[in-house]
Every structure is written in structure tokens, then in C-alpha cells.
Length: 446
Image 1 (spheres, rainbow, N blue to C red):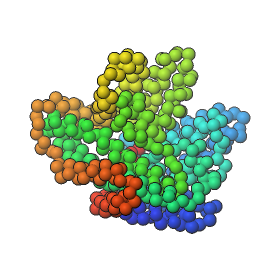
Image 2: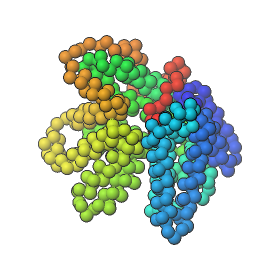
Image 3: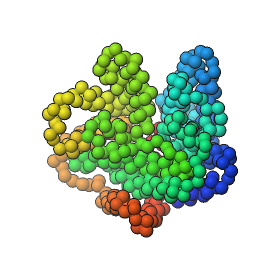
Image 4: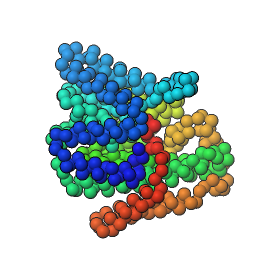
């Protein structure tokens, strides 16, 4: 189901009216049915698998709380969660060869598996640590796992944040519906118009990679963060908006990340639900275990966190390198903090923002170009900076992007004016309807 389509937006609005029109004790079940239907619209197998995943973690959570040997049950749960993720996410070649052999899709990578696996692991850790009690009502726990707004690409929700919102369920609020629909339309606009145009521009470069001039290559490299941001932020706003329509508050994923002056600060503002998950469940646990090592414990913990962060994205060496580059940058910032404050604080803070953005742009080459040959071509092309040709720069796309950015900037300026804001939202809807297509979200692949 295309989540940037007018049909989907109307479906959300209609379902919310039904949701508030039925008795409260049927509402969780209603949301479960909608979520199940949403997942089935992609493949029935996805629903079957996620239900098995949910049942397993539900009973493991109960056993951890009841059994005297909590540690054994806990580790069984953690190992099974990790192994099923490895089986599906990191055996792509095996899956492809099996499907090719039998001329059918016998094995499929479950949609959203990386996101709900972290939710399951976080839930079990919370119970083991005594940070929360296991959820007894299966319907509530199931909704926590499969709630459709966050199913494709997160945010990676915490059980002790979402489950309490189900008891009692939020009351009807016209303000929530209005604000939620605004966020939904804004997110759909970011994806359908801006992110897709940026992606089309990127494809134009990627299809002619060996022929790019140095200038075109630099334009491509520095556009990579924007491609990822508007695609991912668009989905996040859609998820937050839909959830708000039903009265729920999901975790934020972005907080003006490109204003960050350091890499450490950047990861507190970008993909926040993932960053904070690794901070709470990996970094803090490792650094506490190794606390006798002093500052070295923090360095090791950062390395472990971002190595796993990279592996979470995929099994290729490129993802491992991305994690390694982030950990090296953050450790450098940690150990040189006093020196940098003493010698560089006098410089304009924009310098830090430019350097941070540039560093992230360079690391994203490994994200968007997974072939080592292509990565090599990109770096080789940068050296051709004397060539100022723009053969593969699509100026029609640049015009669309300019219009999109102007609309976004003006919308932020006039949000307190009801009439003008309404006109802008109608304009966004018209553009969404005109430019909406079947382009998948980038993080949907994870």
C-alpha cells in the first residue's frame, strides 16, 4: 500500500473517525485489524511471520518474570531474536540462490524485521533489568509490535513508552486529529515531492557514474544526506502524524540534525530512536561493564555500539566501514574535546556544521554505493574538479526541488495563520496527488 497516496491519507482519516466512534474496549482490536490488513497488503507471509515473532517474545517476557532462572530464559529470547535477524537479513545470497533454484519466492526477508527485532530485544532487556513488568494482555503487546504507522521504517518504539499509552486509551481530541493530519500531509509532501526528486537526481548521477565530472560528483556527494533525510523524515512525519490522529505519541527521529556542530551531536539529532536504542542498550551496558578501564571503557563502548549500528544496516563491508568511521570520529571528538574548545571555540560555529555535514556526506557514499568499484569511481571523479561540466544535472528536477524547498520554508513561516496554512496544505495535497508514485522508502529495505 502506497503511504503517500491520497487513498491512504483518506483511509487514515476515515479509520480514525470509526476508531473514535466505537466503544473504547474494541479500539485496540480495531487498530490490530487495520495493522494486520496493512501488512497483508504487502504479503500475507509478513503477517504470519511477525505474529510468530510476537507470540514468542510475549511468552518469553512472561517467563522471564515468573521463572527463578531469569538469566537462562532471557538469553534464549535474545539469541533467538538475533539469530532470526541474521538468518533473514544476512543470508541474502542463500535466499536468492534458493529462490532461483526453485523458480519461486520460497524464502522472503520479512518487511520491517530490523525494526521490530530491536523492539523485541529492548522489551526483554527492560523486563530482565526490572525496568518494566511484562505486558499480560496479548492484544496490547501485539499492537506494540505491529502498529502500522511505524511498521515499515520505525521509529523504533520503546515498550515502556507505547504500552502505557494503551491504558487508558487517549480520548477523542479534535486538536490531535488536525495536528496529526498536518504532519501526515507534510511527511507525504517531503517524500512524494522533495525526496523522490532528489532520488531521481541521484539516479541520474548513478546511471552515468563513470562519466561524471568532478563538479557533478561533488554535487552528488553533498546531496546524499538530503536524499536520506527527506525520505526518512518524510516517513517519520507520516508515522508520527497517523499516531497522533489516534491519540498516541511516538518517539521523535529528527531534531534539526544538520545544525549539529559535531558528529556526536549529529547522532543525538539524526535517527534518534535508533541512536538512543544503541546508547541505552549497548553503549551504557558495555561502558558500565568495563568501567574500571576509565576513559578507555567509553572508547570501546562507542566502537562496539557503532560496529553493531553498521551491521544492523547490512552485512556488507561497507556498512561495517560506516560504523567504524562514526566510532573513530566520535572517539576523536571525545579525546580532543579540551584541545578543540581551547583552540577552535573562537571560530564561527558554522565551521563545525560544515565539517560535520561533509563528514556525513562522505560516509554516505558507502551507504548508497555498496559496490567497492562504484565507491572507487566516486572518489576518483572527485579529483576531476577542474571539469565544470553539468551534463547529467537535470535542471527540471532542480526546478521542482526549488519549488519544494520554497513551499516548506514558507509553510514554516505561516503555520499560525489558519487560512493561509490551509491553502498551503491543499497545495501540498495537490502536489502529492500529482507526484505520488510507488517509490519505496529507503529505510523500508531494513
